[in-house]
Structure formats: structure tokens, C-alpha cells
Length: 148
Image (cartoon, rainbow, N blue to C red; front, side, top):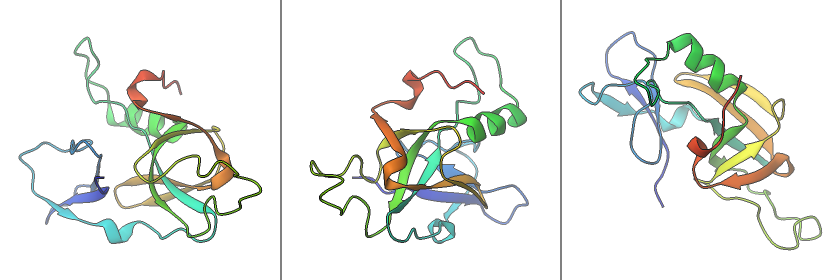
């Protein structure tokens, strides 16, 4: 199981970028130096979880480059995200979740558009969701249409 990393550009004024499980950096060229900034992600408490909203590719299948503003708006409006961390009480209520957890760390999940709290950190936006706000899991977030 691969761990999530938040990476930043060392010794520059650029925003840090978020590294996805497949090790591709969103918005960072491979030649740019990076450093680990995982400690910037808050630790969820109780039944809450931290979800990183999906961010589309910078280039469409047809080769059109997408602007940074469009990428940021799409990420804010995204209803799909990657579970980065879970609080100690997530899915522990056996009466509410008799079949066990609905998701785990490193799963792509679907949630309601306005669910949870939006939190800005260096490197982007994350969502703080309750365990019962997860609607579904998906294998590949690119298979969903991400409209904003």
C-alpha cells in the first residue's frame, strides 16, 4: 500500500504540489526538486477523514493545455477524492456499519458536492469529511465526468 505524499518545490516561491499514489506530481515537472511535507496534513479526529479532491490532467486527450485557474475551480467543485487519513473512530460503530468500513486510506471515493469542510493548506485544498458522507468508491477517478 503506497502512502500519500505532499511535496513542495525546494527553495522557490512556487506552491507545493500534491503527489498522487501513482507517483505523478500534479502541476510539477519531473525535473523540479521536491521534498516531503506530509506533516502539513491535519490529523483527523473521531469519525472524520481527510480527502484530497481529484484534480484533472493539465492537458486534455486532444492536446489542449488547461489553465491553472480552471484546474483549481475543477478541484474545488470535484465530488471525487483520495482518502489520505482516517480518524481513530471511523467506521467503528458496528450497528451503523455491520459490514465493516466503506473505504480505507488510498481509496478513491465519491462524496456530495457540499459535503464536509474545505481546508486550504500549502499545496492545495483538502476536505474533512465524516465517515458517513462517503457515497461510493471508484477504482479510477478519470472514469467519472468532473463538471464544475
